[in-house]
Image 1 (cartoon, one colour):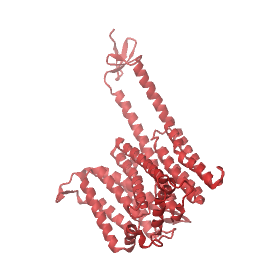
Image 2 (tube, helix red, strand yellow):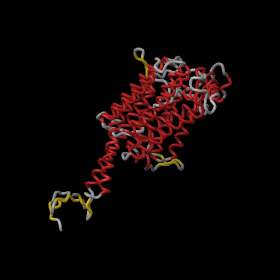
Image 3 (cartoon, helix red, strand yellow):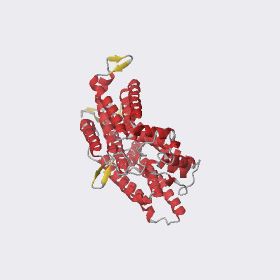
Image 4 (cartoon, one colour):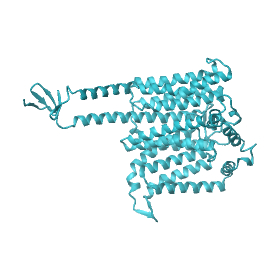
Length: 484
């Protein structure tokens, strides 16, 4: 019998109930029933959309066009079963959220370009494989912190290869891809994850040096010059993307993620304000010096200067977005294909036209739930590196949403950033699923660490002894007589 002080735990109904509830909770977490139930809820958009398309197109539900959508459901169920078999204790909300977003993307690709749906399914299966391998693999995320400079070196090599050997498979004039034997890959999708891995490790290591500064420029505390190099390097790198590769989207995304991590790690608003000022100053200079930057801004401010030429895509997107109304034209009944490259650049507009304002707001709310859950994971993390890494990975997704939705709504200039899990594209999906794998892995490690802390806390409680007959055995193993 176990006793704490003068009270015995054995035989007390409350204690037995708490033990039973804890056991049931662990068993449910291990079997991931919450994730299983939410997954089937997340399949509702894609399955209901397939039913509507079958009715509009007057095709059978088993038509070959819809097979990729059914394969999508099978792929996510298989991923769930692998996580259950591996016994992972990771978050049970992440996979259903991703399934819901990717399902909407699969549905839009099936609606807009049915011939590309099998390839989208292939990318999703590959992405799920990567996420699962990262989530259940025999490794720890602390390794990323130890090899942060090696990760940075890989990122530099990717940037250099893109600048030297970049290709333009779309004929847009932007050499943002690397090609090999007919296959192309956009390095910026992997680079954004590598950037967060490096910055999280660097800011954790140099936090004291960056916050305990003695030099000042007017009222602004200035950290030592060697520790300012990453700020200057990020500023120069983003301007390089803007000038040489004409990649406004990646420049905004990378710099936004950098500022987010800088503020979360240091809590210095002045650093963020100065960094934003540097970027805006550099962007303004690029506007006056480079024609392609000036063109992007001009057609954003006034798309009617050339509605049949350079700004044709923006004008058509405005018409499409405005015709959706509150409830939309009905799925399969609109004209989103009038907008060039809808499945890559304007999936939000296509959804808003056929699903209306309600569908568009619903999609944004799903991303909001993802952001809330991700940031709560970051706040609950005990290790500083996991806190920053989780924050940075969530910031990648949310900033991408802000940039692409803002571009679709003409709040900012249109960029080449994709809508995470929704836009068509292999590089984007693989990079996003790698990010999800890291989040799953860190949530599993946090659960394991919490379980170990709870076990140690119970063992360290004073006054706990195990009684047997007339003797009691303390934690040190010493046997002593008990009073009657």
